[in-house]
Length: 227
Image (cartoon, rainbow, N blue to C red; front, side, top):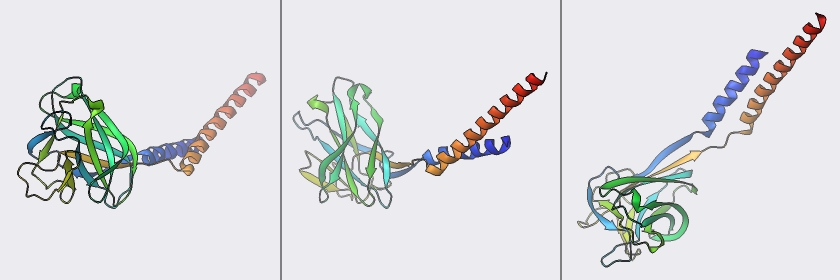
């Protein structure tokens, strides 16, 4: 009986961990490419390019967790960057769907820094989305977003980038010498909910342990009374 209860609880615990595990899929990756330059995130200064936008697509998968890594450059100061997820509007940035997170300029070191953000959001299959970088609360951020002329990364070719408030949209297919897709890695993952049968199995195992403990207590009391 003890071995059965232990085995039941062990199997349920293993299944619980397995069902809760996340499997990440890289949807877009240009992080390791050579930087060709950077564009300013802010829109408050002369010659600025912000807000900045880069698209990615989900392919056949659906996901409920989104991780974005960005290659930024800037100096530590009081500014900040808001990173948002946008819908697609006929191959152009659409409406805001959710805020992925914010990045403080104090996280910037002066060189090219890779900064990561994660949020829960349901991504639909075969759908294009946009990542937007904008000046957080118009703080005149020092952050700039690195771009590349390398289109060979996962999911890069065939996507789009935009700047200047998406007045112009460019395809990631070459032909430009003074701009290219912004450097980022976008991953989607599925964080599964444990199945009801798994919870039932785990509960059964614990009930078995409880019953064994109760029987042991009763036997001990009977033996003491007999003495």
